Image 1: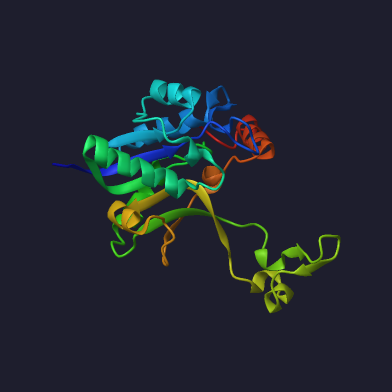
Image 2 (image 1 turned 90 degrees about the vertical axis):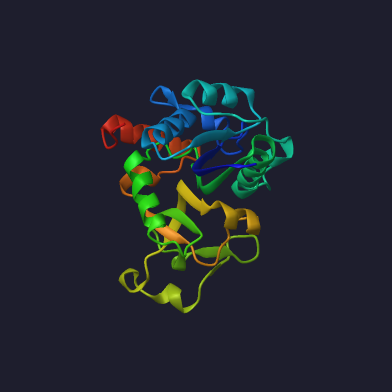
Length: 238
């Protein structure tokens, strides 16, 4: 017999990171990135369960201290670079169903590299998701400042480059459509559809545009330095 609940929050937080070592537990303004995410998830009061997926003892210790659950030590192969977030979350949902008889209507994925999200952003995104029952997924996005239509790619492995796009590359900025990138602030999935497909590459994805710097995703040392700069300058209130 399964215990049916509404919302689960999964926070994927591996111990290793290629571009910024230990980024998920790196301290920003005296607090780890993981701590920011767990605390916002708790303050939102949206979730029946908040779990962290990791195989790092350090990450698990911090997650538990912040008030999240770490149901199991995830398989090491899921920490490999080719294993994406979808695989990690799919594995968590399968574990909770098999080992704890827990199933959830909706799955929220919060990346620990977005420390500036706020509870109200999660509420706004969830309200939008609930108002579109025909959509199987919602993804938060941030507008790109530079048009990707002007991008160049190396042609022969040297300094010779060619335009990635054709006619679009010749258009002026105001003539080009606005473009956006996933920012990791939140992903909401209808769990049954996610499990049935095994990934979240749905044809149509509902989007929520994250306000201000709420969608800042820390992936490099430069990103981290920029986050520190914003805090020091007072652009972000925590």
